[in-house]
Image (tube, rainbow, N blue to C red):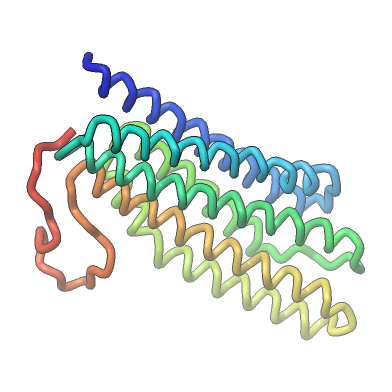
Length: 231
């Protein structure tokens, strides 16, 4: 194993550790909303500082390896993909922190029922994030494509959650502030799924060199494919 290969392996472990930290913080954020748990909400908010610190460390490591080794082909794709995935994970961490802040605010509001759609969408969003991180670990293009295919399902769950919240507004209009907070949480969930989809696209690029961004359904296969050996 060359020195570069050893450094890339260390970098892979760093990005996976960041992914695990983000996933755990997101799970606690969901629990904070559902259980109206102030301690868990506070833990999520504080945990975002560690996520930010690790994100900076991964980025600095990527830039160092680019400067020192000037990698090409698969190694270069790997580093570019890690830089992008690193940024997406940091954004997911921010959204988890935002959910924690909304949980804190909801505790001080009149109790309203958590819409049934919240548990469904949070569970599905968490599953998608877990799946895409597993795809990253195994460099599994098939699993990454399954995440992309789940986008329509997430959109439907989001619309269903919005309808749940509209129903609560109609039945309990006197507690609008709490309901508005839940609307923002619903939007965060939808954005979380978008970031997971972006990571799936980056995994596909990392392994196959295929750029998925901006493609439309009738795009000819391989139109955006770049040549180069696979890692």
